[in-house]
Length: 157
Image (tube, rainbow, N blue to C red; front, side, top):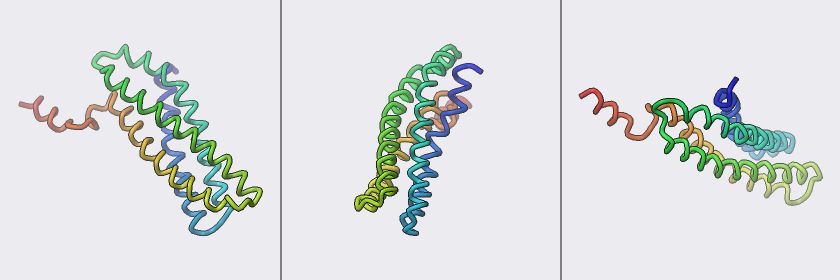
């Protein structure tokens, strides 16, 4: 398994965990269940850990992919920039979730507002997860790039 293969194996996890975490946390907020909220926090923490894996494997993937004919360094650089921002936000969400998990466990008064803050933060992380995932896909999947239909139409004329 080379660096690109490993990156492909782990890079979807940091994108999926925030989505699952947001659904679980929203369910916990709506049902007023601390156990479900804690599960959501735990999912966000797992997401930040998997972000570490994806980020640590990115350089190895870049080395492999740069050698493939027809791959634009522009798309790799754009993905790398978006991934760095996403990673910082994911780590922040994981840290805030750890604090919120503790607040919930200790039944602190800040526990309830913390769940709303985490939920809002999770939506921001999801937005940047989508940006990062799409920019990564665009490296090899020309069909998802903007104006891909225009490019396709030009090649058939």
